Image (cartoon, rainbow, N blue to C red; front, side, top):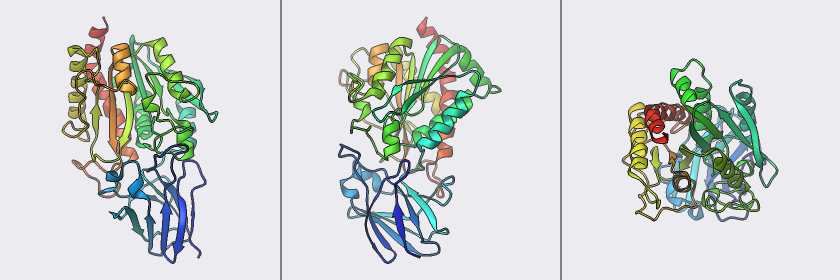
Length: 377
């Protein structure tokens, strides 16, 4: 059977360079109007029972080439269960070797969270009687920016994910967090919804998600560098969300991401903002310590360099919200690889583990909700 490569589907990204027997050379396509690229998602057809070698030949020029070291690609024959497959990075080329068991198999940088699955999530969550659902506005490609509101408390909690669309683990995290928040039998959920009002944007970048981008929206803009001055022309996603935040206020915020290089889950905070206070910092640390206690998948030893006082980047959402609202704000990063402290040789870091971390973050929020209330008073 003739081998075939395709990516003309929701979230797909790859270009075929050449097929030579069982060896296939590929290139990842850049985000539209941008130099960023690293996300791939494609289908291989016709290789059942045949050992194949797929070489992505332009990895040296990708956004984070160090992220390929010790990385293993994801493979699936049903697009539901994703496993890791033998992968090697040498001399700028990522080589994937496998013998597919089916004539159609899909490969991805991480388990995809397509816009079709996003719409399924929206339909499911919006049907819950406790949820208010609406669109905050439209993207440049004309997609809706979905928003959920639930809870009755005075604390204003914002959870938002996937500013960088290729970081699909962020929406898997959202799926887990939403499942917990809608579980009426969960005592943590009941208490959180009593004390806080949740504002949730499960996908900040629908256009990049559908287009198969790594990091940018429809016009090549990195949304997480737009929070100081968003515009309808460049970044309507941030413009609409920040306007709603101005209307509601923000007491606690979590921006959910994925990191290409660091094989761990970690937080990045707001230490360098001009108006930083000890109480803000104390609550951020208390949340981090609570998350360590409730989830062995979280740690505090590995992470990003902490900005010096006054040197925070206020174009990024976490710093902007901490400065703008005095919020306890943070960025959660999850790995594209695995959590090296608690590895899974079959799936690596996975959708299920991302969802479980979403649930754990709500448990950690519950641990500090009383202190957040005292601060608000």
